[in-house]
Image 1: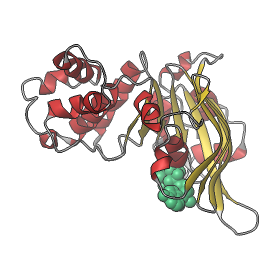
Image 2: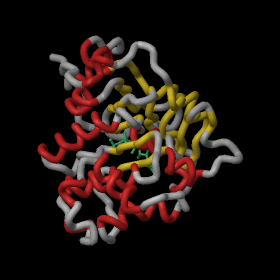
Image 3: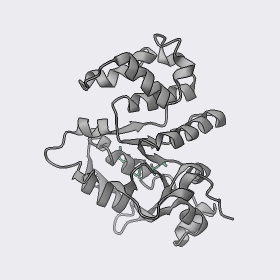
Image 4: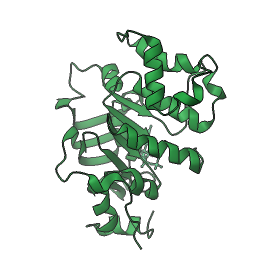
Length: 275
Ligand SMILES: Nc1ncnc2c1ncn2[C@@H]1O[C@H](COP(=O)(O)OP(=O)(O)OP(=O)(O)O)[C@@H](O)[C@H]1O
């Protein structure tokens, strides 16, 4: 039995307008090759889901998209990842600027132990962004993250007093505040209840009007609901030392991946026979 793809993906254009291109990418942790030869484009204003069994390298690839892996000792990316045509690993590229333009939201909401207002204002301040009115920027970011109405009367209160779902929307607002083009989400709903999860999924559909989203999810129904395109990864023993290396098996529109998978490994995974 296949999951039916039910989300906005049905309108995914056949011809993608790529904003990011991943070309022949291998990612290593020391000598260990965690993922191998990934080729993948991300379409402008699309939601792309990365799915696959545990350990296949989804988070590793996601972190390489905004040079977050730079912060992990021993991590190394080979190949090219282009953003608006420019290699983000190029010699003169500032990784801080890369992370501003390609923001990230993590599995566990991680607001700063500061006020709601300061959580949003922090990024623009430390990056020296020119801001006409910080109040307006805070309101705009919280509105875009569908949180403004719930917090507008308590902006000076600690962000840690918010519910998990609100904290995650705050983290999305924080990512938005520095005006990124792309938002990477690493299992953003993993710690949330079904209602909070639904709010984030609805929010993602609103955000894709203005942003490109790449989401790692364990939840295939979620990929089927939200993503325009889906990439299925798996991990296979590599020759020699028995390590398992992640690889991209199949990439297509979400409808194609879930309803007409071309590779048996994809079919087995989405039909629950594996993983
Ligand atoms: N910081 C690290 N140092 C060394 N190895 C790592 C590190 N992070 C991940 N790995 C290894 O890289 C491989 C891919 O891990 P990764 O977390 O990217 O997979 P994943 O598909 O996101 O898994 P999960 O779904 O369980 O989160 C695994 O073998 C993992 O053990």
